[in-house]
Length: 342
Image (cartoon, rainbow, N blue to C red; front, side, top):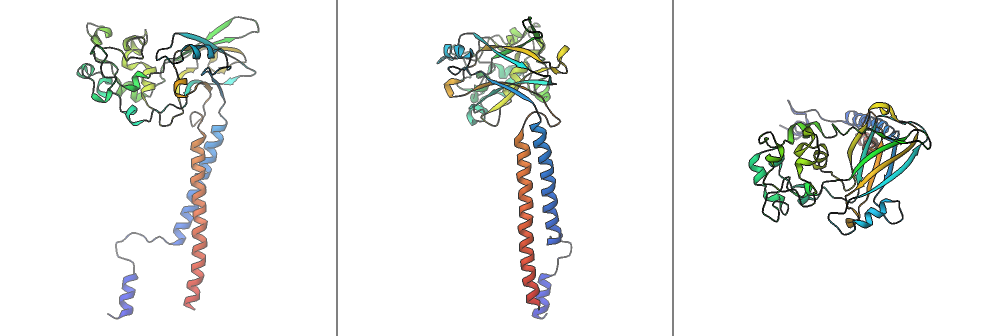
């Protein structure tokens, strides 16, 4: 073949090959994807901003409320003495429900590699052999000083959040406070509660006998089978424990504590004065952390999370910007090709 024929053969489309992207195809794709991402991002962002929240930092820094007494009493202690404090607030209007109660921790790195693997999933699934022989990844919370296997073992379980809260409502000024029912059921992921976490087989109908011969983690005040008087919410299937064992990806994170959706509070929190009784157990000042209580409503996208909307807006803007850059390059070189042909 001649040189010109060979050149035409090299540049001719291959039979059976994929489509060749041209400017008429690529540019609309970039612009359409950018507009779609921006539209979705705006929806997510404004939906997140519409969520109502009420938060309170009860860390107990000096001069920040009555929880500072509890923080000072537990300073430098792995197991602080029992202490209680309260948070008082008022609502001028209805706090639209359903209302979710979260606790938030800051400067707590659950994503640390050694911390994240310090657990025994076989033990948490209820295998009797794993209960007696925890894996080495749990060290130094694998066995107690007496040589007993720790159940549940590992650093994640040992650092279990153990503050507790109760909510009270004063319906009339000067009247008595009435306790607001907190729904503590169903706060864990369905797959965690029903699939991943299981108690060991009962011994003579007793969960305590099933855990006989094991020791609780060093920072726990009671064994795992006494986490709750409810037999369906104790041991490895305790809802608070299951929620805590799902580690967070960022050093500032929230975890669900309860829902408010029962009785006279199914529509939300009515106007009036409120008091939150706080059982202060969890030390955070040693690592520079903070503890917060958060009342939050939800939307179709869930809880407040502006990051997701911002991420979509950034990606959509980059797609639009890339599309314009490609359009300018295409027009410029298209004009040069036309000049060359002339």
